[in-house]
Amino acid sequence: QVQLVESGGGLVHSGGSLRLSCAASGFTFGNYPMYWHRQAPGKEREFVAKISSRGGTTDYAGSVRGRFTISRDNAENTVSLQMDSLRPEDTAVYYCHAQIWSGNYWGQGTQVTVSS
Image (cartoon, rainbow, N blue to C red; front, side, top):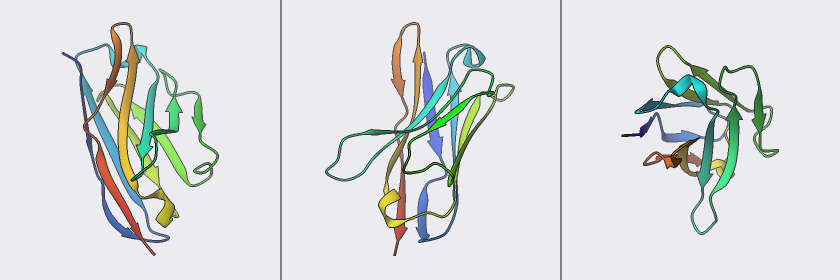
């Protein structure tokens, strides 16, 4: 079955960096774009970043563009999110997301907390 397992969250000071990773299994990873989303307390889940199936095209939410970088390794079935210049408003649970032929799949999420 499809599994998405995030890792790399934690507590960091404002201005710091974190790198999130998502290990995917159960589908042909290199055939599909991959996404990162986040959900802050009391807010709806929101789009953060997208990467095309082969990694040639990326897209970002305006709030993270220039600070976050999404990448993927199709040999390892992983997608990563490098987060630099973190701000307190980046505090959220971050989710890996795959939209494939059989439906939408989400990881369990990883908590990122940025202190001021």
